[in-house]
Image: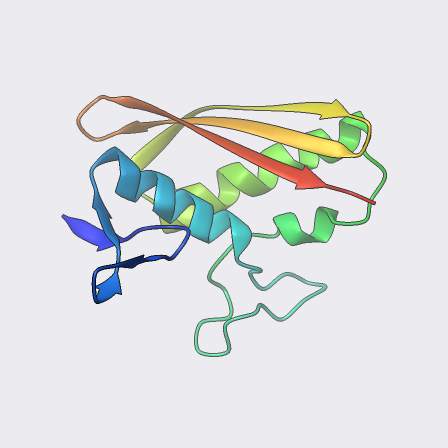
Length: 123
């Protein structure tokens, strides 16, 4: 199966596509970086407000251990809902100064473990 690569970029005359592990990484990044509807926000895609995650609520928060734990919950919830073809193996958070790093490992239906690295910077 093929889909659009994330981040979006051009390949010849159209947007680049990806498949396999690259496509799953692209899906995961797209979901986690899209602001989904929460009790405090409406979601950024007017035609599908629920799509995405609540991880955007963590912006501009103190980078504490609680922030890392909340990030893990938002990641797990969003991936369970929007990428049912993968199982979340682990989500770990590490903090240094104003940077929150998330390491997500998912297992695809074929049994392959796929690591995904994400990083947020808080002011």
